[in-house]
Length: 251
Image (cartoon, rainbow, N blue to C red):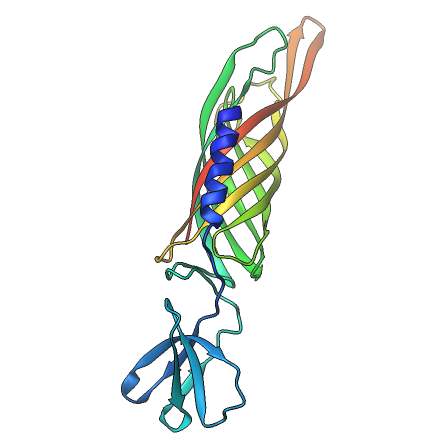
């Protein structure tokens, strides 16, 4: 496990190296020609000074030749190599996770691993904050379907940035939705999962993320057994605890 955290920290360092934040402004010229870069504030009212995207060059454009200026006041985050990440609006996501943890039985030292699939959708409330909802397909001793709310807080203003992630939701015991025995009242309880991740920008609309977290999923086993004149009831409340390593795709 120590090696996994070491690799994660190295990936974080590489992701943050050599970045620069700029804003994407657009100047539309006659004939539909388009220039992109960052508009530089100057006292020169006859020209617009534009720092070209992807280079250190600055050009002066006569105001009379400009049909329209689109200033990116939303603050789209961008790398100097053209990679970018949206900072406002709706997004969707798909991620695959590895869940790893010990059996909840105190006498069983078996390590258990399983895969988990997440589907999510959300909104950029601020360039550094998203809120959303999702559903996961998890397997412990049986399939559980957590439905959750979540939030991400991005820790820098760069396109490639670490973030804090929190999911809170309620699990659904899938097997018991379709095949519940007469005296079985077992059910999944609350789920919550904090995590630390890295957002990785790209030249496409889709962007990758990597994350390490810890998931808690409550479950109650509740059985009643008929015995002549009365029922014998057994109730056991457990909490599945899993280290989670997730790779995600947002679009």
